[in-house]
Every structure is written in structure tokens, then in C-alpha cells.
Amino acid sequence: MAGFFSYALSGVGFLLVAAVEALSVALPLPLSLPFIVAAALSFLAAVHAIVSSILSAVASGDPLGASLPLSSLPAVSLFLLYALSSLLLPLPPSLLHLLSFSAFAQEFLLFRLRSNKDPDGLENRYFDLLLVPILLCAIASLFAIARPRSPFPRLARAAGLALHGSWLLQMAFSLFTSVVAHGCVLRRRSRANFTVACHGHVDVHRGSAIATLQFNCHLAILVVVAIGLYGALTGKSRGGGGSGGIGYRPVNKELQSFEHASPSHFTLESDEDEETSLPKQHDAVSAPMNGFGGAH
Image 1 (cartoon, helix red, strand yellow):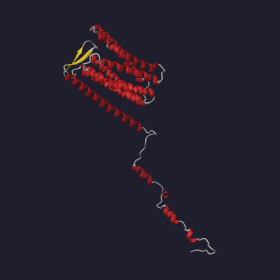
Image 2 (cartoon, one colour):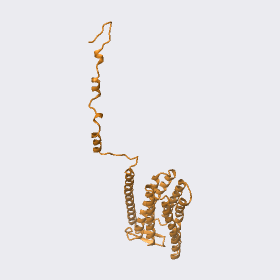
Image 3 (cartoon, one colour):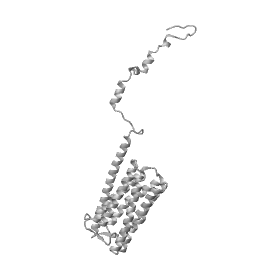
Image 4 (cartoon, helix red, strand yellow):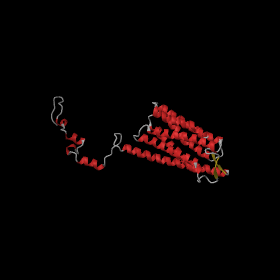
């Protein structure tokens, strides 16, 4: 169950970082809170990688199992550097987002190259799908470099972190519990060195299709939750009585304002009536012509 708890706790950690990242955009939270959470989780991930490497080397004697956890240390170190730099150094926001982009790029390469270990393992399909939220986070960090004050790159990165965390939770259940795809079995060589082997090509294709369906469900849930949260935050900001909002008055209020108005301000006469009421001086006076003139 070591692998299950490792992936499950990592997924919960990413979900926590995503929640703090999203809420810090909409609510007046302390600016250092997202970086404190990221620093704590990065430190725990680094400690876990070192402990897993030592236990794999001592318990099983598998040299590959001892080196696999250490391969994640470069990405974890970049995440820790990003969090600590935000807390301790007066770096500009663009440089901080550059560190974040470098960390996600390192993580992308880590999981992209991991599939070369066991090309036929079903876990490779799950790792390939994990590249999607990592790539989303990297692209969001890249846009944040150009626009560090805009909240939209941070919200996109929070969405990628949420999908990253939920997919790690799915991997914990789909790879290390009894809900593994039918016809496939988990084979461990050490604490960190494992593979999910399937009996035939049909089982491999079925397991890959199930993984794709699970990822689509996670993506759909994320879209629904994101739209709901965006609508709630937008409605709250518009309903706060700001000057940018559009105020609406009931129809009965408008009618009452017309009823209480002074009658002297209203008339049923038109401009044509005013013109006809003017004295027709041109009919009463005529210009003299050739010495003759008078009223007609």
C-alpha cells in the first residue's frame, strides 16, 4: 500500500495547492499563503523521495528501484526554490513565474521519459494522460510571465493543478487496489519500481480505453466545477453594488415616479398646435405696392 498512499497524498496535496491558488485570486487571502503551502508540500515530496530511495535499496536490493524516486528530485527542488524565492527574496513576479514554468517543464520531461522503463505496462497510459494537466500548468505559467498581474493565468494554472491532483488520486485507486482493469495485475520489484502487466493485447486495449474514459470524466467534472465557481464569483462581484454594475429598477417604481410628477410639466399639445395658435400677422398686414395697400 506504499504506492497507494504516495499517489493519494500527492493528489490531495495538488488539490490543496489548486484550491489556495484559485481562492487567492477571488478572496483577500494573505499573499504568502499559496507559497507557504507549496513550500511545505515540496519539502515533504523531497523527503519522501529520499526515504523511498533508501528503503528500496535496503529492502529489495533493486538498483533501479533505488534510483527512480531520486529522479523526481530536480522537479521537486525547482518547486521548492519557486516557493522559497517567493517568500524570502524580493524577486519580480515575471522571474517567479519563470521558475514555476521551469518546474513544470522538468516534471513534464520526468513523466514523459518514464514510459521507457516498461513500454508494455498499463501505467504508461495513466502517465501519458498525466502530461495533459502538467502541460496546462506550464502554458499558464508561460502566459503569466508576459502578464504577471493578470488573474487568468493563475486561474488556468489552478485548474491544471486540480486536474493533476484528481488524476493522481485516480491512479492510486486504478493501479494499486482491486479496481485495476480486468486481465491486468500489479507486479512489484521494489517499493518504487512497479508495473501493471496485462495478459494480452485485448486486455491492454481495454485498460487503455478505461483510463481514457476515466480521464474524460475527470476533465468534465473539472469543467463543470470551474464554470460553477466562475459564475458564483462573477455574480458576487456584480451584486456587490459596484459602480461597474448595471442597476435595474422595477417597473412599478418607474410608474410611481410618473404619477407623483407635477402636472405642469406635461402637456398634450404638439408643436403643430403651437404653430397654429400664433397670430397670423401675415394675413392681417400686407405690404404696399404701387401706392396701394391695405387689409384684405
